[in-house]
Image (cartoon, rainbow over all chains, first blue to last red; front, side, top):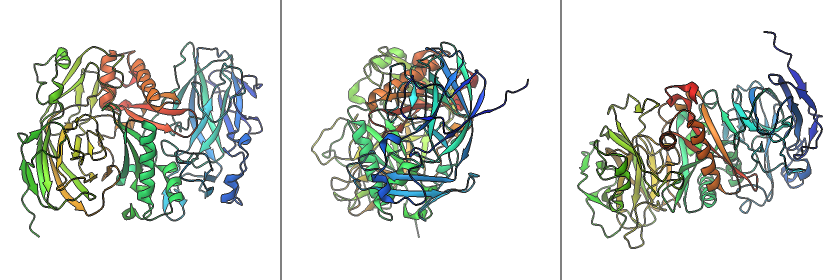
Length: 317
Length: 317
């Protein structure tokens, strides 16, 4: 069978926010593959000359630019759009920031902070963090969704039933994602690519980095899941837990408070040897929030788990 | 240096609930190692003759019997009790149940259900689940805590700042746990050993199984963490994600609702090929609840993640 050529959608085909009224940038048939150029989540407002103050002056109207939408021929409300994630071509430049007013502990971290990352695009060299840590390259799509049926525009920040800014770090090479279709043609858009992140993205930013993403698009007639579903093809990259993990916990009747307690305690723990702002950003790019138990009423347990392998000085954690 | 002999605490030295007034069953010096025999979480009410109905007639007053307490010489309020978990000797018999009124989806599963497990005590053979799945042996301590300073008795079910029924599946061989000490002597008790569990323990029971646990006890003067902290020594056992995972999501402004949505959707997904009750129990013993993002206000994303490797027929999931 002759494979159709892989088509390319450039990052000039970009829109802000979700709106089914945005005209398609491309029309594809089910089974086609597309390479999609994604701008970074800051739409280029952060570059090699940026400083901590840049985080205080970002234009929120330019957050999470989305490349698309792609109209998938024959997609109808109630279908599932099946996206197979095939490959990432990274830019080699990324950033992580503390944006005042944003993030799980925004009240505890009022000041702007910026970490720049210049990294090996082959993915073989971990991303260096201030001589403290080395984060394996683990690229994924932060924002991927179809257009909501409800007339827009809709803010790009919150994810929805149709996906969007889900920041699920398993949306990586080899993963198959099933998204509900709510409008004719599905109208898929993609952006906010990340070079690495922990489960939770606790400071509000990951390693934000523009990339090209190659995907394949298919349809399951009438197969819309209630919420997005996905399947990975193998273990998470980087064998992060090979040297064990360090974990803090939050325990109590409110999951959000337990998450905040667990992350705050991890920052306290790491702050014995590094700046609290660095610890917070490191948690965002490398620590996972896990629900250890959610049944022993009235108190639940959340663990904030960081792998020892990322630390240059493992004895320090 | 001559190691002191390993002492043994038998399961007849057992109490129900937490209370600093319970007399110590053993006094140890920091640095000593103890083998502790733990009854199962049902205190022997479940055996090879039990039926689904057994789950409706369990005496809640006998839940989670605790072996102990152990008085650690010199432990004072404000210290950390450091517990190194060295080894498990399992009984070879376990159970998982749906207990009416208990569990994350208690409203959706009103009927009692029981799964019995007879397993290889060497830990080398996975635990078979009705010809559907095979769960690697991954033993850990479900309940471990020091006595609360507040006069008791206190219900054993909810975990607290001093630990207790935390059901953290990383409290396994090689893990070091740091617990706050609130009373003289710390008064450590242990029980509720599990042969395997997913993060969340969603149906309310894991693979409940009596075991002997060997631990070492040390103190850090004035080192009490705010909540329990732990460090593992290596990856989770079983290489569960080698064949990838299947994941469902819950998306919305309330983490508890998102968790319930994600688990309910996983049960729906698995129910294409197995009974919903089996799917729910399988999630409890093998699926993980992860917080994918907790910053894209106002909607958070929770993923319910189950490894493909446990399924006999991997194509079915």
